[in-house]
Length: 175
Length: 217
Length: 178
Image 1 (cartoon, chains in turn green, yellow, brown):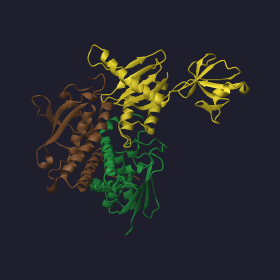
Image 2 (tube, one colour; image 1 turned 180 degrees about the vertical axis):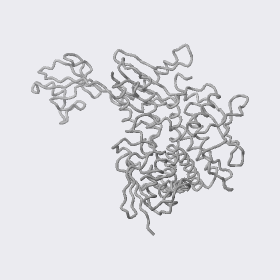
Image 3 (cartoon, rainbow over the protein chains, first blue to last red; image 1 turned 180 degrees about the horizontal axis):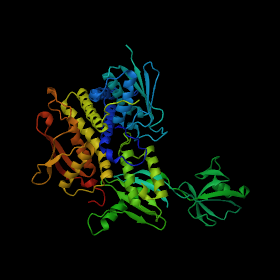
Image 4 (cartoon, each protein chain N blue to C red; image 1 turned 135 degrees about the vertical axis):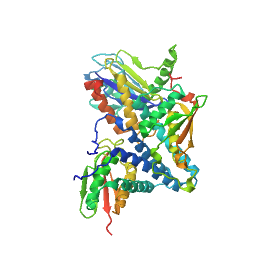
């Protein structure tokens, strides 16, 4: 029994999944809220840390509940694999497409069609490249939070080269 | 089977999206000798055929190039005035290209705002209450189908009169709008839709309908 | 890379994601605003923004027709909750004039893990719902007001939202519908 949603590349609307779009609307509102709050709106970098922080909380908590009946992870890589396959496919409808690591604490998670980007980015589109990082801050935090709960302290950054794909860089902090 | 274009008009009556899908191009190019036997007029920043229709060049067609050089307004790229050139025998024989003029975005916005009251009038003509307004508008060369959502957004398709299933197509366009415009956090309501993803999906939808009919979407 | 043991239930995880995300948002708002009333307002505002988009999704998917009766509206709202949140509230307590009703929730995914701390007793945790209702109805040219009568977070046995018809927004009604 594998809970893996096949990425539907058809043009049909995802009729059975209406409830899932609620998260997307909510997320969009959160992004708007953070951007419009008083610390933002001035020139310079967009202040996305509240989004990251909210994501952290969600990731931390969701992990707590998910791993209750799960066998202990063998090692760091095993944990990351769990996130790429199981967590990702339940949260974002598909698995991470490609995972790379230098075996020294750097992991690059590559998603070819990230859920929060699929409604804005046509393949090879550059239209929203500048604004798109706003949509990833929450997920960066979510990744960091879920890892933190499993005892891995890390920093997570995101990178977008072409929509709707993106890469998450996880840098594990060794103590 | 041809679909000419899709238009979306917001609830306040502004054109927020238009897409030319399959507009047949009509172009005629040939060499003319002095004196020119076609009357040209300069109007609306275009040089237009006013009289002397012949050989596929029709009244209303626009002069688009002279000796392969494109015409901008009444000038060529190098700044020469086209009408002056054409009145001078030294420049002949000359190669002129005429084509059917395309609607500019401004003209489309203007037409969309005219359709809005027309729709309102139509909805009042019926002696029965709750008339839907214009659903189909028929002419010899096209049919316009209009679907107004409960929220007041109008979706319109202009197609060949024989094209079937356009009412279903309009509902599918509405779904695309809900999915790729409204779920796009960067799109603000009532604003022109400039979402590439919406456009690509629309393009695919229209092509599928043209190729294999409405039952396949 | 296969792993034995139970796989995750995607539907459940997804709904938890939504619940927890909403919780994180409320927490962030409580941090940003000193006044709980302002949090309630902000939640309502965000709900409104969601509602005005959500309604098109609802109409495009369901193809439902216009309501000419508030009872119709009540049923549409009920099915909206079913589609988007996966819960079916009961419609009760109709006012004699038929212009107000209550939506009662036995369970509410938004509050699944929530317990209100003492200093937030005035917090309307689910106030986003009233915003969604206002936004969605306004888009189909109907002004409604809604508020919480009972809240399970405040030790009531059910959560009850009162929805009241205010007026039809005649100016906004598209041609052919008046």
